[in-house]
Image (cartoon, rainbow, N blue to C red; front, side):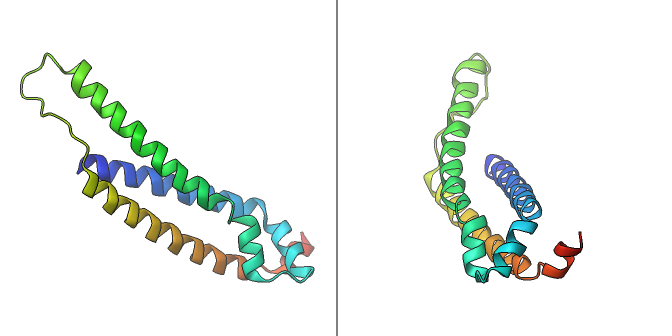
Length: 127
């Protein structure tokens, strides 16, 4: 359970920081796209859409990395210690964490798409 919590906290922190950085770094681009008539959905797809497959790939790589790391720790580093429980991959917990990650990721994408809609073209042009 600790592994699940640690993994999710790290994943969501990284996700939040990444999306915030992308939006803040592209405010002028988004404003110009809106000036040229792109819809909010098209702006979101252009700015944020390419990160969706990468986030799912990152989740898969992180899951494998975490499993291998824990397996190494239990089997090699702590093999001579008594009372160390055996470590087995918990597939149901992985599925639960994947579903939670996808749900929260899509909610964040929706929230940030609303933030994109609120970017003021006038404020960008004044800068």
